[in-house]
Image 1 (tube, rainbow over the protein chains, first blue to last red):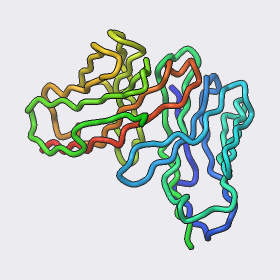
Image 2 (image 1 turned 90 degrees about the horizontal axis):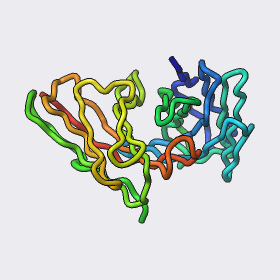
Image 3 (image 1 turned 90 degrees about the vertical axis):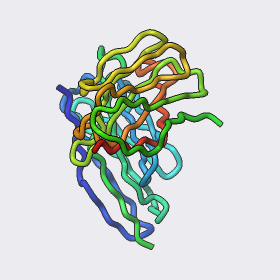
Image 4 (image 1 turned 180 degrees about the horizontal axis):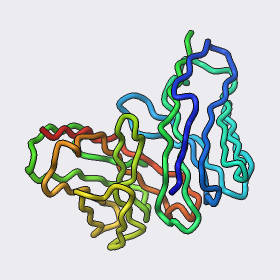
Length: 113
Length: 115
């Protein structure tokens, strides 16, 4: 059974710092990996999706990498801002498991002004 | 505006009283899914639907029913709610399912409290 772990569970940084969030998964036979942002009282907003054949995806100040062989993905946030404060979740979908996905517990990020 | 709409957003009810949480999307997505989110357990998939009249169990389907009679709607039914179903529920949709590598779109959530 696929397990997804996110470390750290919480992170607090001063504004302007670059930071890395980690996601690890136990079954490397994934179809894709997706990073989401969740604000309090809100649903999840998709940030980046990496297909299994890709190594990284970039969107603005965000860069997500994928290393399937080691079962790891990282989300890099450059020049963090207070508006980046939220919970970040990663989710993986398995090959052959059409429609099924597994989420990590998330990392709660606080960026202090 | 492209969106996934859930109703109600909040509901407090009692054990055994049947309830339905509605989910509707306006993006003509084939794939829809229900999740529940609990502290320490993260997001867990309840049911999903690859298309109209096609539904399948996720990881925690016990105590829930779903139906997909039309593409835009995917209601979640609790026939006899129990306190352990108190949770935050999310509906999501994707254009053509996970195999298409399209991102999921989520609703804003429904917070259910079963007393």
